[in-house]
Image (cartoon, rainbow, N blue to C red):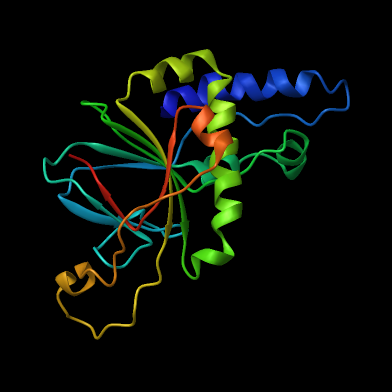
Length: 207
């Protein structure tokens, strides 16, 4: 997916801007995409940290990966941040936080928007952000073919504010049922029409 973003998606953005005429802003090529390949059985991710992977309970969402699959986590927001505000505004691009998928078995492709706080303040915006990414991906043939290879495509909104915890307490403290709610299935027709399930959860299972 990283090479598809650097090549096909950038070409797609250029083509969209070409319709705007001579005064259209210029797309910036992206040579390097911020991403991590994670095979831990349990890990968190968090936005705007020096390292994407965080200890369990320290991020906005927990991933469970008992088979130790190679999970690719791409900082999609960071990828789009390479573009000028003019490009973002002209093309009405939104910036969900991460793209997450298992590289080999291709069971899940996830667009994951994170929030540290009250989900009620972010839920509607999160739906729009994730739909925007899914919509633009669907317009790039090579990306759509890549996505069609996955068993499930998900848009996941994760909102969780970790409690303050004394240094040295076990990570298991963070895994109790009160801290991680059951998945909530959300309805948003524009996302479902693109073939994605929309859920809200702070715990994502890769089985």
